[in-house]
Image (cartoon, rainbow, N blue to C red):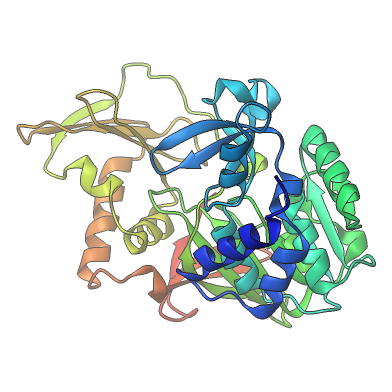
Length: 380
């Protein structure tokens, strides 16, 4: 089944190239580091029509077609607590969609000789691609939080002859002993960029990460480290990755029945389906996150304060127009959120390309148009 490997890879590069340019260096790396060497015999493909199981033993043709297709392939569910054959569960590790891999590596722009910190080894595919792009003599350091995932990645990489430095630990801490880095490549989403990544990078270094502001649309962020120890950049595109485990989830207080009930003229679906620009504005102005429950005939939008589990709100869509709001805690989160949305509208509904991010030792700030026009905190 591997005799037509060259045409398969060429076809994959052609598909990727239909939506974004693929540099000669990346094309060479994709040919030198075949994806199938980093995909297990059984996985879950994330297709547009929904997830489905691929099994190399029972249906090799479908397995090969999927591996050299455009979809991400989940390799772990619920941190390993759920067998992959169950298909459904919380996705906790994957081999990322090839187009997304190319997007982030293009933003990263690694060059031969660069020292690279990778956060999230996963299956090891991007580690191998980076090793091919910058060198394979200690230039790449990759940190993976899950020991089982790291062990399999090490086997995958050894089988291909790639030799990045592999570590098990919290990628949010980086790896100070390997600093200073020229590039930081992140393969999990964050809503707060750890300052350790900036601190361990030299001036002029580039940090590329998936950024989840806590609203419906996730983005890529590209930051450049400045000589003063800060990093600044913008949101050049869209991407979707699993959350970094250290930032995945936060406690929310149980409902004690003491919340405030009211009606709201704002349809909660307006907030839930807001554009990336609106999401960045609302995140910056409020520091809040949203989660939606769209089960059956009922749509509920939950608003949570990551910094305080005792503050949350719920807005319930009513087809008759009398939408309901329930707010728990001292802050009126729903009102804050709708006010922030109205503020974004008053600015002319700026898109995500007008927003940027600055990371300092004190935290991070989202800004509009220029770093001097700071809106507030991003994430928590």
